[in-house]
Length: 111
Image (cartoon, rainbow, N blue to C red; front, side, top):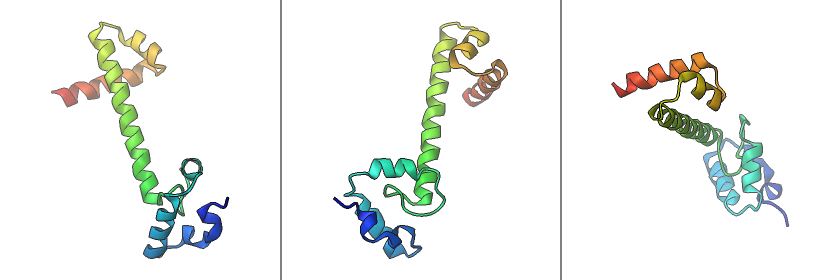
């Protein structure tokens, strides 16, 4: 079975809006779309896994936001449980100063 980018590979690196749209649509039927997106995660050019460079940047930003929120949520839970900054830093695997800075930012946001 041939994957879509093997049939007409030049459209995956075209700057034409029509080609970009065709490539993204073809990726929707590709059996290796997930793997391709992972391979192209840090690529500056081309359509990878149905994503343009702009799509990949937006997806990366969203993943970072979700990760930050998960960490902040874990910190709030540990704070509510009365854990010390040192204990929280050890559990989270981050330097104590980094955690203290984060706690100050969270306090400012909550105010």
